[in-house]
Amino acid sequence: MAPDPAIMQAVEKLGYRVTIGDVATQAGLNVGLANQGLLALASDAGGHMQVAESGDIVYEFPRNFRDILRNKYLRLQLQEWWKKIWNVLFYLIRISFGIFLVVSIVLIYVAIIIIITSSRSDNDNDNRGGFSGGFFYFPDIFWFLSPNYDSYQQQRPREKSELNFFEAVFSFLFGDGNPNANLEERRWQEIATVIRNQSGAVVAEQISPYLDDIGQGYEQEYEDYMLPVLTRFNGQPQVSPEGEIVYYFPELQVSAFQQRRQSISNYLREFSWRFSKASSGQLLLSAGLGVVNFVGALILGSLLQDGTVAAEIGGLVGFVQGIYWLLLAYGTGFLGIPLIRYFWIQWRNGKISDRNQQRQARSNLLTSADANLQQKIAYSNQFAAEKVIGKDDSVYSTETDLLDQEVENSAQIEAEWRRRLEQGGKE
Image: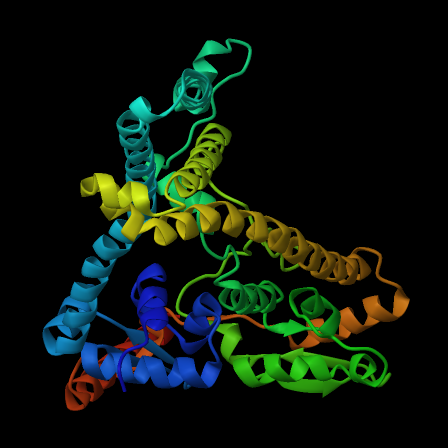
């Protein structure tokens, strides 16, 4: 079984000495998976199990366990190598769209200039002057859309952006990824944190603001939505004398260190999609260049319509005619994709807003809890418990030979027995 990256990261964040409950809370993992993953990681990375007198188990890992695994697993080495290569490749892919935009504009307008220049002797003065005047208006558009345009307007402060021009073009086209890509991970981390903050005992109303698809009627009344939580964290339901159900989670009540109450949101918040992280100036520049590119493609298409011009001139014009439909498709997509994506984001954010409002409404039930809910929460507090297993509590560790530990424990017991005898004699 290959080590789970989420478990490795949790072990590092928690100081290399953890319990199953610690890892399940930090990584938001199923308790059973956390148990299996810790066993596999301890076996592969030279970790040690420490058993307390209560029978609880703590896992302790060397701080260089990643180096141990990296030397042991060629697959991990290849993954890290590929991750570095992919970061470079993906960056090249991102900037390629901006580069192709610039190349497309240059090819289109250079071809237009060549065609106009070569056909100047065959056109009358009116047609030549009218068309060229319209063409040479574009430099003013480039100045208006340039990133430095805002500097001419002292009353408008410039927006700062972490993206360069080529990255901004990609962001304008495709955005910057799903802001809720780790939503499930955050969901289970926050649920586990709520349980830990309540000392391992909760009621369903404290968990429901972090869940979706709660359902209505039978499902909500009988709290079926708690089943995945019980399964993931090995929870135990208990019924109060009034017939109310509370839940406690023994594994999450045990920790290798003193837990502090963590501050978290009252409900699971999904983040709204952003159209782009680029600044408004960069977006305006990208859109403007897209318009310039598309208009230029249409003008070039009208000049190449009969096909004779490219045949007569050849060279660059012939090459541009060969890839003209690619240039036109790119220009159309450059403007069409962001437009479609804009309306899709509006629809998506509406759905996200509805879900956030539903979760917030369920969290408001706790702030204005009625007598029945308060009684239910009070009953759950009977099962609340916290157990911290320090290093002094360990009676056995796989780090040391069992026989040596038994001898050491026997010596400690004998010394403690003699100390008590001496105190009794003095009294």
